Length: 188
Image (cartoon, rainbow, N blue to C red; front, side, top):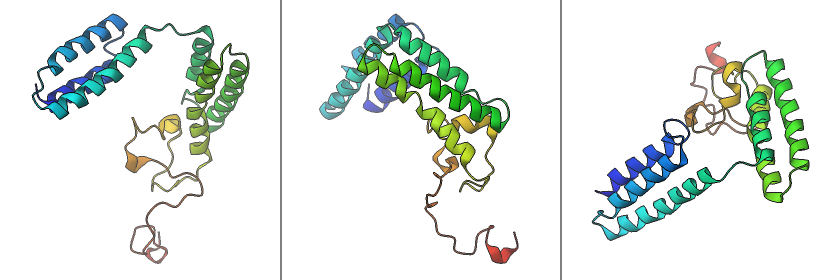
């Protein structure tokens, strides 16, 4: 096996976790099979890189086998409901704001600091949804904000970087030279 094949299979396993691979034992089996194949990588530096990636995969297996606390389960349910992208912009905003408040209450009652922090981190997609809803219709991307996907607009795993709306007040990274389609002298 060469490193490119190893990396391709590692990425496939990681992406499959939670979708086509849902059993932690199946995940562990896939990681072990990859470990056996990685031992055949000829280049020493590539084999060392593969071992580092396998340690991360082992961490994923450990996390998959660790039961979710009641606090995190409740917070996950709140996030799932609050992040729904259906409805009007006002309904989406209301759900996001209410979700942030509910997650705050859950975090306040968390039994450990680590669980509290994990719950508070779940607020991020809700804040991003609010940022997208607060964006101007153009939002720096040249396209109107689609309220059906507003909750996912800042998710780099889903949206390509070119479709990412600029944070409010941020420069778009490209000066308007006057030759683009939104140039004032073009009458658009």
